[in-house]
Length: 284
Image (cartoon, rainbow, N blue to C red; front, side, top):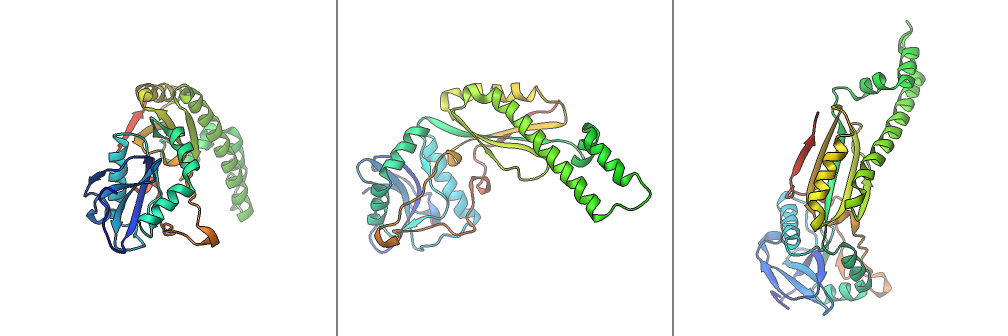
């Protein structure tokens, strides 16, 4: 195995790729050499680590992302969640063999594709006041409870919040549908992620063929033209296809594991350093 070290060190898993044994360089967790362990069909990209639990510190997150970035420059890997450590080379090979069918299917699914992210937000000073101005139903409820001389009750405020949330959700669905309709022709798949705050209209991940990236960018601009200056479009990538890979490692017989799962406080792609960059697309 290329780059293999002896001893009782664990093997940190970054990704799964098509078979091939090679060494990439000393840019893994803790400066470790990154190399592959193969079962002859597929291979895991790993580095040696002295601890079985890797903390999600910035330097470790950055190293994890750097490895994925270098892999993405050559092909599309199946990215692992941050923090997975196998007991050793034999454990890595067992993981590959037990999950080979799923790995091969997903490698074929994402082959020659990348993940692009698109985030649309309401670019307004006060999101509630914006909805009051643009939705007569919410304006009527607000005026009914706050237009009188008496102070609104807790129940009144809850009702206003309920109406606001319902209208907010409905608008998000309509806007997301309109954007995805424009993007559909250049995306193999899309996945909507939950909005992270009230101002976020949509946060969608797009699986795009590498050759269609220029078309994707143009279609983002085309979608943005459907909206007025109350909206901001930002897209980012390319990324490894985190949102389109479902890796659930199978434990060995008896329920024991050959690997240490990531800590509960592990980071997603959103918490990793932004190698792809974010571009503001359109503000009119």
